[in-house]
Length: 217
Image (cartoon, rainbow, N blue to C red):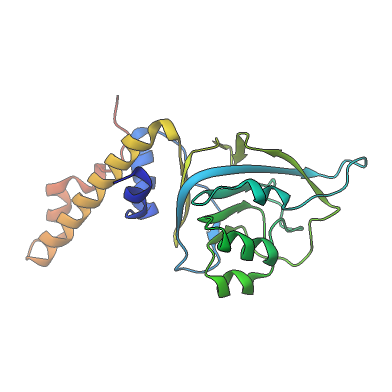
């Protein structure tokens, strides 16, 4: 089973705890799904926008032709909530081409299209005003920063109802193994409690309160 498939089977909560345990910052605070059943896992295709500079007109979305199926588009727009960088045309094209989802450090519009297509969008909110003539495409396929977290192209993005985490490609195997361990331990705690153990006792037995504590390498 591929790492993407293994991560797809894990909640972001377990992945986040695994990142904590290893000592990696990867949780993208403030970025949330448009619908609670949205889920996206895949390698990051990174995009960065910048304000128009007076000499270059605004451009929004043409990079989509270069995104491979299965990738998660990660758009860095400095967290701006006053202009959108994703709309209904992009949603419909991305869904048709098998792109796994889109994560925006900013906002989107045409939310109804995303909901109708069941295309996973994770953003800081929604707003109708276009980014055309307000922002420009500044970089594609380069490292981007969201909430002081650097996301490199190919980093594995995991997103669900709880939010979004970014897993560096070089650490993906270790993070996945750790998250799988955490999920097994938490399942054992629930089983023990259902079989009559106190929750306190089950947690103590399986070391629940230390699951996410950073381990020395």
